[in-house]
Amino acid sequence: MGLKALFLNCTLKRSPEISNTRALIDKAVRLFAEMDVGSEVIRIVDHNVKFGVYSDMGEGDEWPQILKKVRECDILIICSPIWFGVRSSVAQLVMERLDGTYEEGDPETGQFPLYGKVAGVLVTGNEDGAHNVAATTLFNLTHLGCTVPPNVDSYWVGDAGPGPSYIEAGGERHLYTNKTVRYMVHNLTFFARVLKENPIPTNLKELYAQAKEESD
Image (cartoon, rainbow, N blue to C red):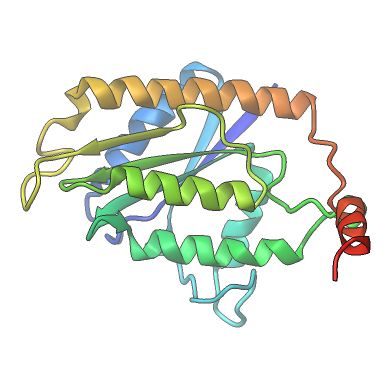
């Protein structure tokens, strides 16, 4: 069964500048390949993605092309550095643009476009905040329709304060990060295959109608 993972790299650095977040992404890509899962990585800042909460913000907006790839993937991974203890402004932008998919539900079931996809998070930074980034982002993704399996966040965090980041600090040798990225890849792959074979049957339109009948 051909599965595809899509990584949205929310670094603030444009190509070809080196991204520490990309270095951790590359490790996950290699692990997915070992499980016969194809991967694509998109560096958001290399594209003209406009601010907004709709799927298409008009002329020049390149988000619709990225959203098409989101719709086509089985596994969606949001990848963010930490800035001031929270996810990057680019990651926030991505989540705001994904908000537009609420209005694009399936005509019959009302399921949002991200239903049937599994989601994970990768985080890098040289200060605390990884749990905050993972918790907020994974919570957002569940609301958008994604399934979040266990142990699907992996991060590397250096010492508090300014200092070397993932690449310079040798983060590729960090046991906890190497452990959790493997947990993430294996669990995402397993649940993606489960959902492929067993689509979620929930009819949101019917449930909304039932709720409306007993509500003010």
